Image (cartoon, rainbow over all chains, first blue to last red; front, side, top):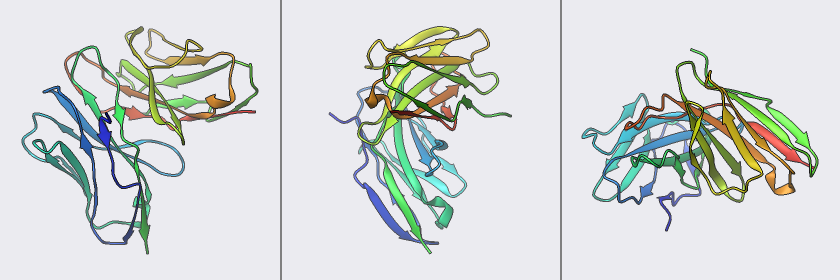
Length: 116
Length: 115
């Protein structure tokens, strides 16, 4: 079974509009972390935002916020007031808290294109 | 604070050759992870090192190996290159302490092309 599911392969959004990128996850661990990364066409992977499973508040970083719904196992990324520079691939990833597992598990990504 | 540095940025090799990629983590970070990214398979975990010890390994053949030095710099080696090894190889670092989950910060990647 997929551990991280991103159901939107691609999205077109008008500049200045808000964007929600979907991510659902599957884990039996109580302790885990959820991450969003941005990858422009140049290839570098840029860390955006992190949510811990025990965090009671939704994470926010500037224009980025994470809509964390633990019971539904969803961790959607919200970008407010989108800009042309937001056009990129966006990946949701999870790191489970078990000692033996130090890897990030990745979703397939969503390609976001911001239209002027 | 300098970020994660990967060298080289681009590499072209032929089948059967071997290659070594280098990664210098953020100062103070002791954990280094490697990932392979291809259009068909997406992002796949290769291995993770902490304090010169491999803590976890992904499902890759033995041709893929790595190591970490005492200064936390890491190298990965791929021997007997195959066409399917063409990919973007990403290195990430994090502080890496036990019992904590911290964001990984990535380098710009090495784009490897096999002819």
